Length: 185
Length: 185
DNA sequence: CAAAGCATGTAAATAGTTACATGATTTA
DNA sequence: TAAATCATGTAACTATTTACATGCTTTG
Image (tube, each protein chain N blue to C red):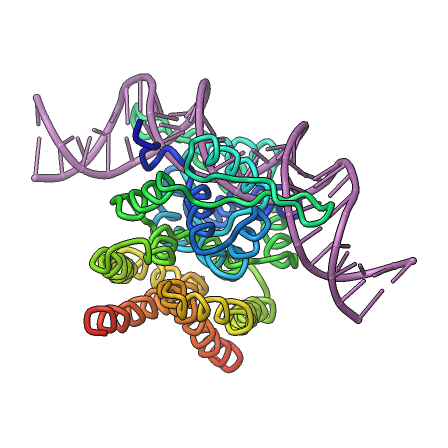
């Protein structure tokens, strides 16, 4: 009778649940919301969304109804009380929470002794540029909706954004220092 | 993840190639080397290592020979000239290098408005502790072998370690600030 | 002699990506 | 009218994790 225990659902299902709760309505809107927010610490692809929506509805954690825009088909969803409970349960359940990074650029830098110095330097440069672009993107795409959510009472999107900014600012600074050292050793 | 790189090898194969090049000899030693170094920006599990070693040997990128220690079986490998070339080619090949993070803790923090304030604060605390432990682990486990490699002419393991330190120090500082604000808003 | 660490492997399941597939609506 | 964006979905493939499975050697 009680909804599925945490662990029954893949993480992407909780992301969907959370985004619907924060105001996204369709699968498409969920994907867009992910793209400008949690995407920086947990990405999901659109191919994961639609099967998960079906499953969440089957499990009674969300309820959906057709809501076509003109002739364009669309299905919108809202979180049910069971869904609220499942999300809260997952959020407060203790489980291992490793910080997993997959970064080809730093990985290549680790092995860069097998590379001519100029190409190694180019890697550091690429890492710096990437984080600078990420910071710009935070400002342009992530901060506005996070501030809107903040004004609406959801404060944590903006707070977690600050962690992302801190990480990428640190990378920019570290690369800057490295570039100086490598250029003039 | 980033699909197979040039030469159609999975990234984990290049990690293995790189670690063998830096002095690891057996699959076990590769796993240990990963565990204290690249694991912080690209983890691989031991179940990926043995099939990849087989494949790399079949492709002629490494050569292996049995080298049992007493009765305990062991197979050691070294990188062939072809393997050196494949690694260098991969390293200098331009490809998308996104910074992908998977972090349940920050993800949960993003949705923490569905949680009582004390539990949200506990999440921030957990993130700070985790990065503090990671920093300690860098000092204890990663820095010594990286310094050894540095003395032996491989400078980039130590340089890439500095990026990891910068990231986790930034997370500690940001969480510290957040904890103060959330405790006394 | 027990525990920790060394050493290797496989099978099954899960997760995730990419490509395929379609079509409507809005905007320049 | 073309391009961008909205919108949804599936199939095939690839990658990855977890659990299973084994057995030796060193150290306390």
